[in-house]
View 1 (cartoon, rainbow, N blue to C red):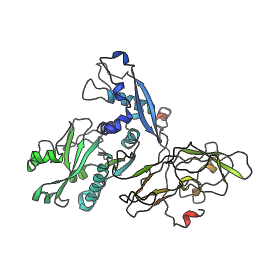
View 2: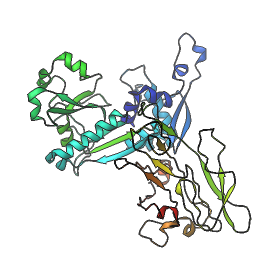
View 3: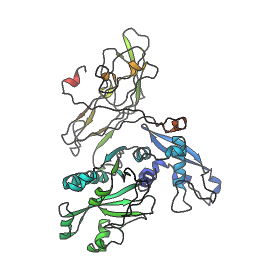
Length: 447
């Protein structure tokens, strides 16, 4: 959570969503009568912003020091209050112990996190793999994605142990810049086509820093004039922030989390996007002969909203196509919730804005699906793909990728179960998905 909080603090447009009306919530010595002793936060949970309110009481030690998250500035308490609200959302402070950075980034931003496991040996030996990873991170960072990285302790190694280079095992670092630096002929030693690939890192704890090449005070910086460094933004901005060569990054770090944001105002401001969310659900249909399922729609979202269909539209038991290409077997007492459009189209980026659906329009779809809990287990889940006889009983969603170079990122979520730790549970349920390629004709017929 600390790394996610640090990333959040670097983007005002993001933390203003998590801490709404921050000016009004701030202590005003001129108007102490306005202070209510409560604070309002918002977190993204399963497709919606969830409001959490906490009081101003914080856990401290006997000497008055905050026990958990705290700022380097003694009179700054926003991080501790944010942690308290997040602990309330998850059940308790203990639920945050050893938390997942990818999940925290999603909760703070509403984005989609993609964990990457790095093969340090392959990246060290193969320049092409390093280039590909660097391009991936540079592209994501250029689109305002939040990126963190960490060093996974190997067997026999301890968390928070400090390496000789100053890096700390198990700590999540934020990546605040990814760029290539021109260094003239000297850059031939670093590769990357005559330029040196570098990343700027931030240690949220602000304690141990990188002590290797290009660290603070390193002689390597003498090869670049200060004016050029300032022009390129190569000056370290905060305590705990440092630069390192990407080759060294690949040598030490084992895990990367890329949280891609889906807010139009934050990503691709010059590209035309259209974002549509149409929540809905399947419910048991009335006792109508031949009708097994009924679809309930949300209210109309406006003129530009998607129009999946009319209210109370019924589906018979012969597996009609639902929104976003969902196909469903009929059965007594069985229901599935769904949402989105009839078909999600992933258009190629950079096309002309004048073409509406076929080109130049990015689509974001959000789908809630699941079998009704009142139904028996056999009829409400199809299992994994190993169970070929029942696998197609699971909810299905169709999308189309129109460009050869386009990518689709799928995020599968479930209710957070950490609050159940006190009862001996808390582990995530095994869930998954399969992506199957079908022909144009097959997509129109029954599965």
